[in-house]
Length: 190
Image 1 (cartoon, helix red, strand yellow):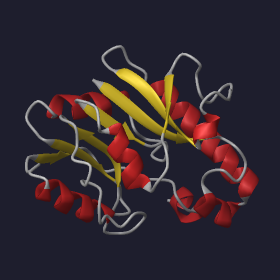
Image 2: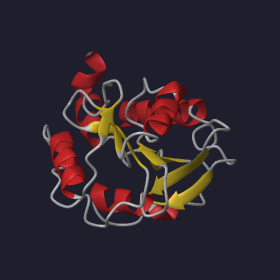
Image 3: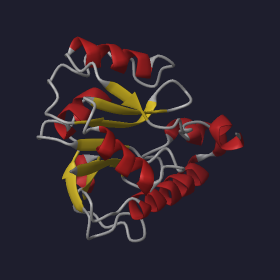
Image 4: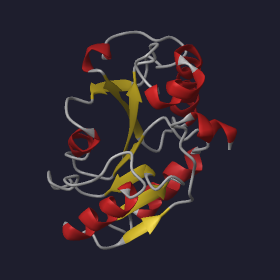
């Protein structure tokens, strides 16, 4: 079992650009660092192998003390949109669970539930309140075209994903609890 955590390098202006538009680059950087460090730290567990999929690729060997633990294996996310990068994460035999660092309320128990649900389901989705998703878990290598024609950062992102899963023959889908992603300043107010 592998947990892949998608993480952007914690540098000013390198992540949370939509959030920065509402609260400024420095404050967005602080929030990104804090959320990333907290999620990466609290989701470590002996039941699964954790891998940090980093972006940009040139950050692979950089040190970010207090944010990216040295003991967590790292891989580059690679180029392309979120779909292309997720397709690479799901290229290995499962079970694989992919999350980002945008949903600060995720718990270790959520990850355990996702892996347990894969015993009976083809896919597990952690729905985000904005119409996207904060987690996707699959049992087997995903077809390379699974993430084609998905509208990213859109109110219909999750619906597009569900349709693509079914089109790829992954009918048995289950869901975890809904969480809020922190993408824009309004998300912080809620």
